[in-house]
Image (tube, rainbow, N blue to C red; front, top):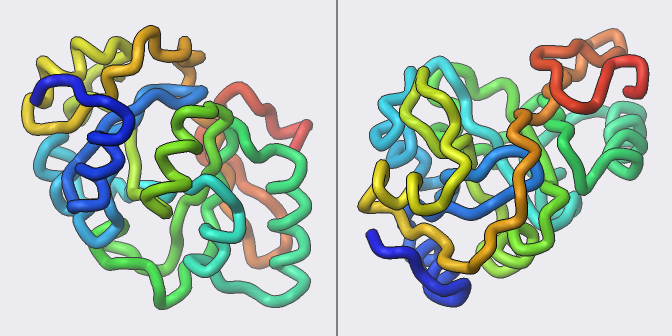
Length: 195
């Protein structure tokens, strides 16, 4: 698909199409959570690898997670410290999580707010989107919008130039444990000692 304006990309997402936009870490492929199967097909992504939900605000993400009031207090504390930013929180999922986002394990969901103004502008209009890096599964992440448009011609790629420079480093991913601790699943720019 040709690269599209901000308004056209938002409209495409609202219509259930896969879109691509920059973030602070890696450019994203994104789609309405109910349509997440499209991303698995496009990327040839194994179904055991869940997508994450991105949104413009934490208030839009919390309904997809469930925990005790004490848990939620700790989640809010870390979110207030690191969001928007390169930290993905893997939390126990609520029954609001569409099955297509995590096909083999409905028990957890990764949540993030990117530190990229244009990404949050899109998300503010679309609501939470299921996201992943823009690449075929197992291949390096694509950082250039023209390369993304060439690799995924059916995806609505944002045409804004220049795209904000991504860090090129995927987000740190931490999972909430039953004992109230965080387990690092993937190390990114935010290190465990800071969490």
